[in-house]
Length: 119
Image 1 (cartoon, rainbow, N blue to C red):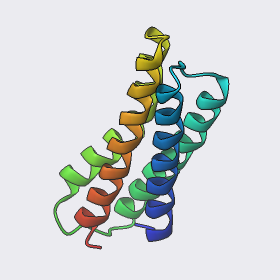
Image 2: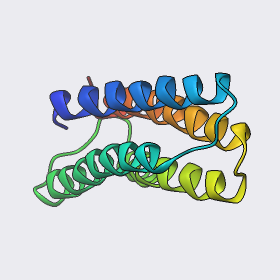
Image 3: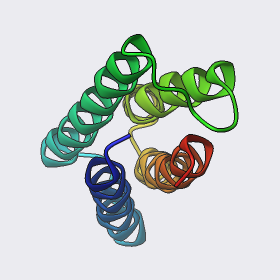
Image 4: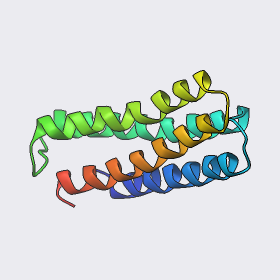
């Protein structure tokens, strides 16, 4: 895994979580700017998914097993889009809370991916 990409994704996810948490604190739903932020974080997760699959295809192996690594990669990629879709269904402050929680979950998944790979 690319350590810089893993940590950049985790930091971006935490920034998104803080931003949406601030919106929830101000009693605001997710807005267009939040969705642009979600797209950026999702793009980072997509790049990480592709890098992880390419590394596996080249024969590199994670320390804690390929199955769990791929599962975490897919979960990390799906985390923010799932939270974004849920926030569309809940157009209140709780939609912002959902995205903030998704950002925290993604950051935790990044740390776990780093650990699974052998970091």
